Length: 626
Image 1 (cartoon, rainbow, N blue to C red):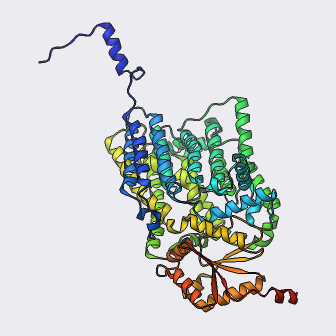
Image 2: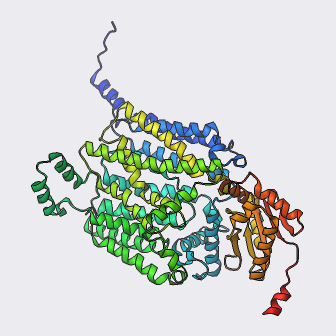
């Protein structure tokens, strides 16, 4: 039997200092080692990613084992950090920060140029504003909502970079990092349990596969959208005393025979989260900031301000925020901008804008059924996106049930998740209405999904952590397919970008650029004096060189200017993915066009080919006919 040792009082004090949480020799939580380890594994995986080898499954087809190991390591550390008696704010924050890097910085680190064709269009609008120092609403609808582009032009000038593309490459990482603060404030105002808050943020990023966080007005306005909700929910909640006494009296009178229902309705009027305390002048400043943010949102994006009006209306109707006039103010600001500042756009597009109002099934079908086509791998990717969306909705439903069973209704996250459905009844939004509605609903869905796992405060059981970790890994797999499934056509090589820049340098004013398919890094320059279009998909599917030549002649005669036929690596990939043709079908068509003798190559590299009609442009005939 071991002999016991008696400690002197001084020794006991020293031992307590070693063990105490406030001791100066206290060791940091072991979970702090996981984020740097995961980032090291991630950094080592980057050299092993060969984007040139991707197939139609996207980035997941070329990710090395180290990349998956990085996220698995991070997941183990994160769920472990939620198990302690007290959640370490530093530990969970570092895990979330590392997660944002792993999920949203990978493409920026391994690809040569900013991704997405729309990115280059936004770069071109920003470049136009920098060059001309004015707007031209006749050119494009984007100029009727120029706020984000004016800000991008200002940042380009202030940072001294050569062009906006230098800012665009890392926009996704920056925006997702900026989303973290308002998300935490929103979740803090709704639920008191730190585990549910942080896991909800974790699930938000795993569900952010929509891809609207790039160099785009949507990304900026979404940040402002979250910021408005954070301020109002945290510092301007409706006081419990403001609940209508008639409601409580009616509940007591009519539901006293149903105590379970009565208790749940009473719980629905309670505030579970931590709301902020602010003095009178602080509240004035916060409200002024909110009014200015809403005013800044209106001229920056077409859809997000409308989504904010819908959300604020729902929160006001259910008496969750004050002052109640904030929804009316937002509606007046957004309505005034649309009615007065976008007249040039509405005059030519009013019928198209109004056609989707009330067409719920048609708008949903345009965003879902219309996308399930193309190559077998692409169909699988689309199905994975549907699975991911449905999974979050099911998890949110489970979260609602779990919270009700634990004696609480979470009305605010239900409103955050449900109110954006109204968007589907307004516009198909170019087939993206369903995607945008999910994007706006994601904060509410993510928090409710987190409550499906952490329904009761203080849950530290091992099985809870195992379920949270397993769910995270499954959703991570779905995220990779859903977000990066089109990466083969979404990314661009430096050679593709250089080819388009060469074309812009050589093409005469008024020339028409015709792409063989979608996904071209164009419109970054000369936004006002060149015309770009995509050749009808039907002609590419039929693969008839004579039909292509006829189309090109007609375009040239109509526009009385030179017409260029543009095919890049990404364009060929897009045709393979969306058109359901054999791999390389567009490249074979280009070869046939050159062999026919009706076209000649202006530029021909490994990643880009630019053709023009062989017969010279007869500009004198055009002049004589005028």
